[in-house]
Length: 115
Image (tube, rainbow, N blue to C red; front, side, top):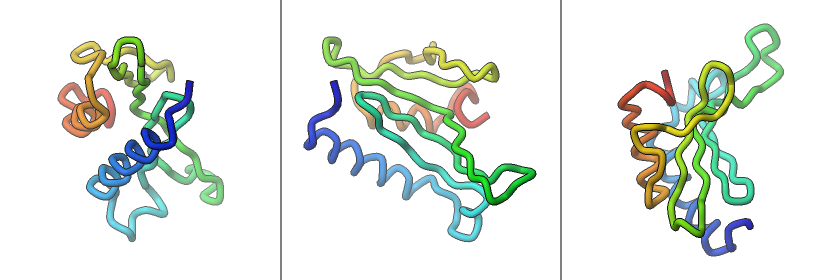
């Protein structure tokens, strides 16, 4: 089940504030930027980069994911391993708020999200 319009607006507002704080400077963004996607009850954070041998082709590289589990009233937290599969973030596999998820990603205490 997807987020309600009100929930979606609230999540987008928080994510946009987060991006404002962590995006690289304007002059670097054509070579490296950060974005997010929301699909159903899942939010992914990703890097935006041109393909190394074809700069006209832009790629999104997801590095953090959270999914809302309504019955638990919790967000599941995932990180993407080198094998490109999502794994629960074992230090904190669940959090209570989207803001908690963003703090975990930004702190990146175990270098799982941003290397």
